[in-house]
Image (tube, rainbow, N blue to C red; front, top):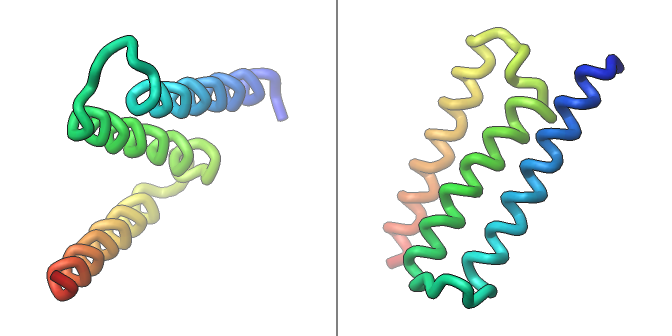
Length: 91
């Protein structure tokens, strides 16, 4: 592993740690008084960014063929549709 890739993975790891700390701040720290909806929305945005980093760099999808990336996106979209259908059928 080259020193450039170690630096890249270290920077991604630090960004993920920062995002986790930011999630904690949104709900637990009373510096800024976020409503529950604001904190939840912020957490969802942060989670999407964290997932993007993990998928792109730690699962090496960034360096794969675009067709595999599109296939993963399709699988994700279908999973979201199934979850929405299940939530609709429960309520």
